[in-house]
Amino acid sequence: MAETNYTIDVTPENINDVVQMSARVPVLLDFWAEWCGPCKTLTPVLEKLAAEYQGRFLLAKVDTDANQMIAQQLGVRSIPALKLIVQGQLAGELNGAQPESEIRRLLEPYLGAAEDNGEEEQAVDFAGEVARARAMGAHDQAIEALQSAIAEQPDQLSHQVLLAEVLMDVERLEEAQQVLDNVSDDKLKAAALGRLFFLRELEGFESAESLQYRVAQDANDVEARYYLGVNCVLAGEPDAAMELFLEVLQKDRGFKDDGGHQAILKLIEMMQGDPAVARYRRRLFTCLY
Image 1: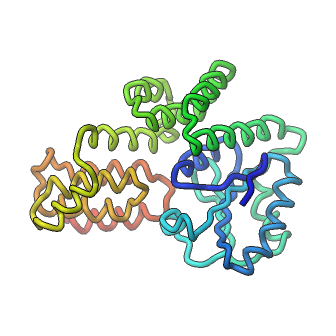
Image 2: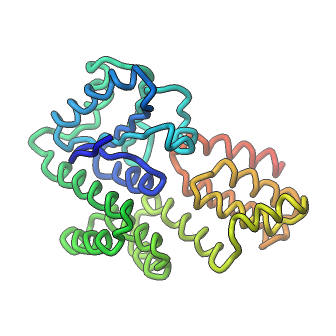
């Protein structure tokens, strides 16, 4: 689907940016597919509202055929589905081709006053600019835009977290750490810190394909399971990562000083607000006790 100033197409590469954007402006995730008739009915309604509200919320469109993992992680079982994210948390949801009145009812408690929407509109435009630059591999452009934004608004911590994410995209990990060290909001930077932790774990290690082979060949290869789990986290496959880390925890708590347990805690921390977290906590508790 074509993007506009107030809509963005979600991909595995920009999903973290989109969620972080919810610290500035509500994000309405629209889960759809080309074959879905009710989705086609809902689309013009959503685009009309996005244009009408002019940046007071960001319409983030998720093609479930192309992004099955994202849909699974967010608990989408049927489409169309709408999920409203505010401050990184699920604030509400609707299923099916809802009328315009119901969508307004979902949105309006979280929208700023119309006369105050200038800053939010700029935020939507800026987030879209950065996300598109990352998707095209124009990381230097994204970094420059973020550095300029931070210079103008040094108290806007979400820009700093996003800068750290882009620096991680190009393996500038020490710079990313320095940026995050200056962010005082632990909750805001939790996902970025988690990603940084797992990127550092994987530095210089063998490929995912090699690790998969080792796992298939040796049921007791704890090291391969751990690092394949790290790969899964970074590939946006937390369920697969959780299973591998649980295996490490069950087979050898001495590996990396209880590394399986620590990796699960880090995964849970970076996925704050995700419906899967409660399930992960239950699995961990069962495994430990």
